[in-house]
Image (tube, rainbow, N blue to C red; front, top):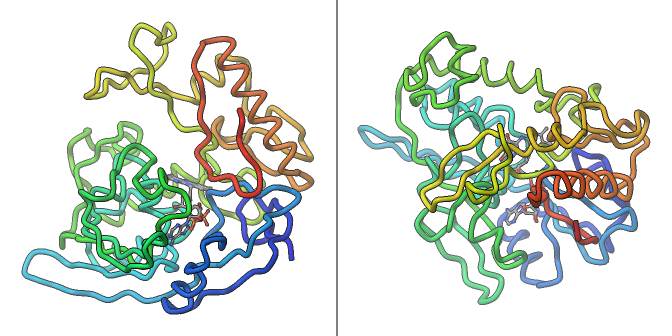
Length: 333
Ligand SMILES: Cc1cc2nc3c(=O)[nH]c(=O)nc-3n(C[C@H](O)[C@H](O)[C@H](O)COP(=O)(O)OP(=O)(O)OC[C@H]3O[C@@H](n4cnc5c(N)ncnc54)[C@H](O)[C@@H]3O)c2cc1C
């Protein structure tokens, strides 16, 4: 059976077999075969048209356990729990720390893999522990955030593909009526507060969802702008001397600057909507999202992504790296 329906791009051919892991025991058993590939929400993967020459295990475990003390609430969340539902529950229960991460599709277990982030928060801010299976040793252990090697859209898990299986994520959240201080200027503007000020939890979630909808970043089966893997490229880190004139720059502790992939792509001549209106095209709402307009193929997606990366490299000398994980094919951009 094709994997396309299990991905948000709705692209990709068959696996050798598909296992549905609904309990932790089933997940551990499936993953004990080193050849088995994990797939959860399918919102950060690009699957080859020819499929994947491996068995795919779908992460469908469920369960949220709550532990409380006077100040904090710890949520022990099974890997397969849908992340956006968890955020909605936290906001409804007055738990602070993940409200800006509303609307991110996929599973809770995948959030530490690329340290998901948006609108000034990332999961590393509230993650207390991750229970993992180390497929090299067969051991199940609990890792603290210091062991996870978190960085911008990366982690120790992403750097060692195939080694770790996230079984549970433990979040440490504070009780409160207001969210964490707003760090993202666009979000502050839409909430009518200054950066660094706070706003009511539910208002933050609503504002984030509204901003994301405007960019096609909330899944909607009827809207092809959301048939994507989210941002296709990460924002690049460059030497300040190599920063293109006028490009946004966010200074980093290591002396590099982070710049905007969307800015570079637009200035290299790739506008929203660029591509095949019936196949693969840049989203009409967001320069960083490559979307399937209905008749797309993975080959066309990768060809457009490579064209964009080559255009940016030629124009600015900056190398763009893809954010999603490739299954059954290599990026070679
Ligand atoms: C419309 C849209 C908007 C998005 N917006 C954002 C955003 O704002 N910020 C952001 O950071 N990301 C964003 N993303 C990307 C994506 O949603 C996240 O990366 C998400 O965490 C992926 O979860 P998933 O369950 O879909 O993972 P999948 O796509 O199923 O898997 C991704 C990778 O993680 C591995 N994996 C999955 N589960 C596990 C597990 N339990 N243990 C070990 N490995 C595992 C898979 O093998 C694969 O390598 C967006 C995507 C879309 C489609």
